[in-house]
Every structure is written in structure tokens, then in C-alpha cells.
Length: 156
Image: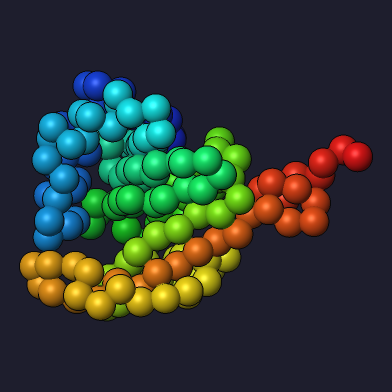
């Protein structure tokens, strides 16, 4: 397995759509995924094994804040550190003060990943998810530290 990560291209949208349908009970439509390429605030990064797309992360950045919309890895490739690699790749490319996300309260694997990379639980959204209805755990990771954004020194 040789995983590479790179930005999504137009020709990748169908593969992302297939992963959405595999991983989420309310997947984004192909049109929604294609639209991400036209939004200046949107970034989608893909994990590939050779030419095969095996995972992705989609975030929106507004001002100094990242909202993690979706992250998914195909069933066959889970448990290999690909989700962590996607998060780390994104964090190295987008300067922000913090990153926010919602995750199904029952998604223990994702919650464990988020905690392991520094996200903290900050709230709960009752009935946020549908099909099935479920609460969302709100999580935030702060990047701005006394040394700077994303831990970089200011050089002062």
C-alpha cells in the first residue's frame, strides 16, 4: 500500500460520490461534490492507493476558522491511519485559529481519532443527524498558541 494525498480534481468527483454513498446515510450529491471545486472557501483532499481514491476530507475555511464537513475512508482501507493522514495534510495547508466539526455520538472510531489529534468536546447538537436520528458531538481543535498559528513560531 502506497497512499498519496492531493487536492481533488474534477475527474475525481465520481469517486468521492461513491465513498459518500458507502460511508454516510445522507450522502452529498454528485452536484454538491462538484460544487466544492468552485467555492473559494472549500478544500477537498483525497487519499489514493495508486490511482484508486480510498478516502477524502472536505473542509470550509471562513476567516480564521475551519469547518470539517466530511472525512471518510472506504471500509477496505479503514484502520490504516488514512483518516489521520488526511487531517494532518489539511492542517499543514490551511492556517487557522481553530477547526470545528460535528460527529455522530455513536461514531466511537471517529471520536477516538479526533481526540487523539487534539480535538476537544465542546457541546452537543440534539437530533442533528437524520436516518437515523442521532445527536452530534461538537468538537474543536485550537491551533493558535503562544508560538503562533498551527504551532509555528512567529519569528519575533
